[in-house]
Length: 88
Image (cartoon, rainbow, N blue to C red; front, side, top):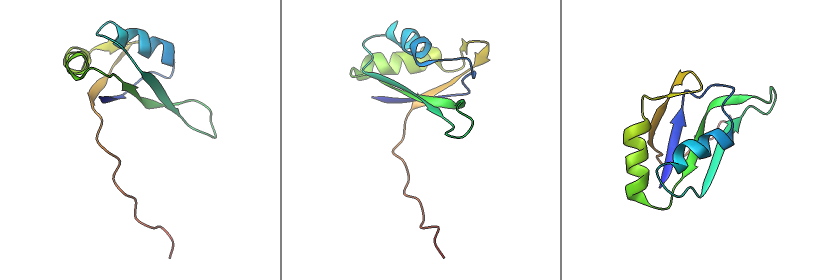
């Protein structure tokens, strides 16, 4: 299951996120999204867990919890919606 994690501190790194979620089971991947220009976290990321039951437990327990001094939002990631063509 792909999990969306938001309201991350700029100090939170992928190792911290992986350690937090690995307490609930196996973690396949962790990706924090970074601003290409400023090279700092955009405050959200994704965690991939192969076991859906473990992922649901992590979502239930971690949503609204504190990580690096911030109350984080944790929920199942939704597929990205198609973007409209911005050309005129």
